[in-house]
Image 1 (cartoon, rainbow over the protein chains, first blue to last red):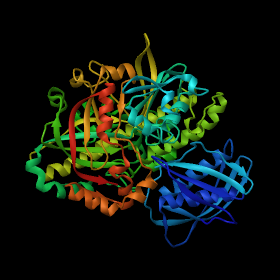
Image 2 (spheres, rainbow over the protein chains, first blue to last red):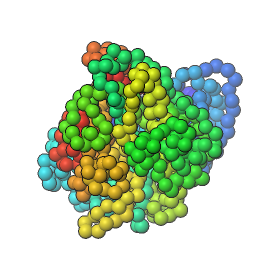
Image 3 (cartoon, chains in turn green, purple):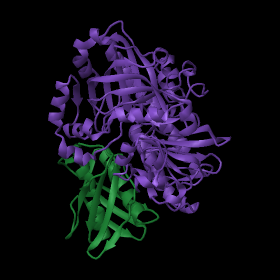
Amino acid sequence: MDAKGPFSGFSEVPHTADIAIDVYAPDLPGLFRAAAMGLYHILGIRKGTGEPESVHFSIEEIDEESLLVSFLNELLYYANKGQVAEDSDINITGRSLEADLNLLATIAQEKEIKAATFNNLKIARKHDGLRARIVFDI
Amino acid sequence: MKIEQFRKISDFEWVIETDAQAGMRVPVVVYTSERMLRDALMDRSIEQAMNAAALPGLVGNICVMPDVHQGYGFPIGGVAAADFESGVISPGAIGYDINCGVRLLCSTIPYAEAQHSIQDFTIALYQACPSGVGSSGIVRLGFKDLRKICEEGSQWALKNGYATTQDLLTTEDGGCISGADPDAASSRAFERGADQPGSLGAGNHFIEVDLVAQIYDEPAARVMGIRQGNIALQIHSGSRGFGHQICTDFVQQFQAAARKYHIELPDRELVCAPLQSPEGKQYLAAMRCAANYAFCNRQLLAFSARRVFEQFFPGQHLLNVYDLAHNIGKIETHQVGKKFLKVCVHRKGATRAFGPGHPDQPQQFQKSGQPVLVPGSMGTESWVLAGTQTAMEKSFGSCSHGAGRVLSRTQAKKQIHGDRLRAQLMAEGIYIQAGSLSGLAEEAPQAYKDIHEVIACIEGADLGRRVARLTPLAVIKG
């Protein structure tokens, strides 16, 4: 999954026991895509080739942070099944998310992540876009 | 937080009173030395303990062990007890790897007789005990058997020929916590758990071949079946994807439940629900399923390891010393002030350490106190301790679970090369079998606290008593 648009991405942040990333993007779907890229980076996933499988899912949660955690844990579920999202179409309206993913089989994965967590999670709106720090339990 | 803000009770006991931060309902007590406390203040672990003190219905203190380090909401090495009637249960204060724990087996064979076979034995163990990312276990189960494991834990293993009666007698809760309800766990948890019983996993999970280097308490060691000079085996694993999914499901669901019950917390990962609410009861029932799954998982790994051991060392035996949980929520009765209260003890990276005479431990440990397993980091010593009466009085019968991290995984990977580390450990006579070199670097001894200091603090605070010291001979990492 590639981040779309300018000024979006992620960087790894030191954490004693687990792994944290800072993600940034101009808009909310971009932030979710950047977080997904960070997740796949930590997992050390390598994509295979072949026909992608199309998957659609929808999530309703109490707020944006809950949506983000739920979305990442959904991707983790597929990663545990040996599938990685090559491309995604994410629509967020209020507290609802609709995602269409094209899933490819993975050929390798270096690391196991237990879950994306809510630890001090806050999606902050800055002058240049959105930012969040996500801690993953390793 | 600065060290001057703590009230020093003794060289190994430091208190943060409730007025240190808004919302704290109980004090935080840190059982450690001044030097290690200064180290702990370098990350956010103490801040996380203070946040945890805001959980509703807590009794006594938040207890912090000397191996404490920053987690993702609740500190690793933290213990919190909530009143069973008026308190809450917090999935994040138990952890995603529900009933992650350690099993120690001790053999009848002296090192002198086994030393030439250790490397080959370890290679065979690596082949027989599935490990690594997404590994499948030694048994693949249908839905019906998986439900049975949820309800019966290691008793399922006994019924199916994977355990002995003695194994269950030397497992916390006999390897089965009652009150588990498979209907409380999601279908996704079952899907993830179906092919993983009897697998080690990755991360900090390991199998280690050890030498019993020294006995400190001969009567206790005898009762535990630990003999100086013999080979021993440690297994560190948990509830795999099954437990991870259950915690994930409930942390997410409890975000709404916390609002429903008007619970405000400093960190959303501490999210909780009243123990007596439908949500709290459902989580407790699901969490117990994962706990039983983990007991059975370590039992299956022990079965597999034992089979390899008996092939390599015919006529010798690998006997279970103890199997315990260090990420769990337990309904127990503890004395708080002058009252005996039924509480839910959350142990996150902390081990139960019941002292002599406690009825909820195997009969043979009534005099000595239960075995407390404190593995060191890879390449360093591990310890077997015995639970104490002081632990019952001060820490809800809890003790440290390991050495505790000091370096982040990112720092460890920057400073340590996996291949060099493996060569260094091999040169020290420790055979390494690892699935990933970068994973090996993350788990390097330098990334952890000094286990001797941790043990000195435990003894200084009297939360555990030395029984035996183990030195590593071979390590399998997922």
